[in-house]
Length: 91
Picture (cartoon, rainbow, N blue to C red):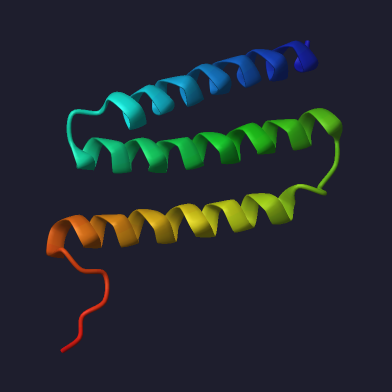
């Protein structure tokens, strides 16, 4: 039963990833595309986490950590660029 639920969760996460990809490519504004990238990062983290549960291993924990850090830094950087037009302030 538990294995069936994990497979269902993986399918739902895959559908969520497709919805995020749709938002990234079709999004009407740049802000929608940034939110799509952030949501895709969270979905990938969840997908890898479910694979860890399914395979009963902790080997992908480092990949989750690196992906979450890159996703956060990328979202903050892109949001700052959209707001100010520059990432680094030269003042």
